[in-house]
Image (cartoon, rainbow, N blue to C red):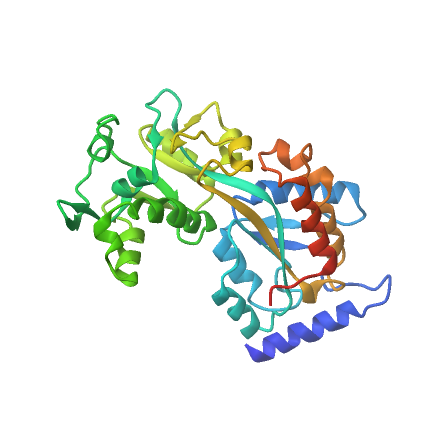
Length: 341
C-alpha cells in the first residue's frame, strides 16, 4: 500500500509540474458518491463539458460512504478526484485518507435537500412524526414500561389515526449518507420521546434508538432512488425514503407525507421548518489540483450562480439554494482553498 501511495504521489507531482501542452496521465475528472448529489453533479458535469474546453467529468453514484471510501484510497490518476456526499465526512474517514497519503481535503458545501417519506399516488397519505417512524422500524420499542421486540405489524398499531395497512418501508442502505441523516433526525428524535430510553446509558440508548428490525418490515435499498421507486411500484402499500429533489421529479407516481405537520418543499426546507433537511457537499482532493486538467475550473463552475443560485440550473432539478450570503461564503471558502485537515 505504501509503495502504491508513493507511486501515486510521484505521478501527481510529475503531472502537476507538466508544462502547458503536455500529455496528462488523465484528462477527465472522476467523481463518485452520493445518489442524492448525483443528479446535481450530472447536470454540472454535462454543462461543464458543453461550456468549457474540458471534457465532461465522469460521475458515478454508489452512496456517500462508498464515494468517500474511494476518495480516500490514494493519490494519483488511478484514484477519484471528488467525492459527493449528503453528509459531512467523518473523522474516521479523514484518518483513512491520511493513512493512504490523501491530505488537503477541501470541503465544498453547495446547497440543501430534504429527506421525504413518499407512497404511491392513490393510496393513503400519511402525517408522520419521528415517533411514528421509530415505533414502526425500531428493533425494540417501549411497551408497558419495558423494551420488547417490536410487535407492530400495521400502521394502525403504531398510531390509531393511521390505516390498518401493513408496514413496509424502503430505507437507504448503510452505505448511503441519507441513511445516517435518517437515523439521526428521525429515529433518534423519535426515540427520545420515551422516558425509559432517556434513563439508559449512552450505549444502550444508541442500541434502542438506531437498531432497526430485521423481520422484513424495513427493507434496505443499496441502489439509488430509482430502485426505491421500483419497489413502491411493485408494492403500492410500501413507503419509501427519498430526497426531495427525486420526489419532485416523480410527483405523478408518488405522494409525500408531512412530518410534524410540515410538508416538505423548497420553502420549508430552505427556512428550516421542515425537520428532516440537510446540507449537501462534495470533497475535493487538493493534491489533484493542477494535476488533473480542469479540476479547479469545475469546482468554480459548480459554485457559480448559474448552477447553485436561486434561478440556477440546479434549482430547476430540485436543489434548495442556500441564502445568498451563504453562497458567497461557499465561493470564498473555495477560493481560499480551505482544508478540513
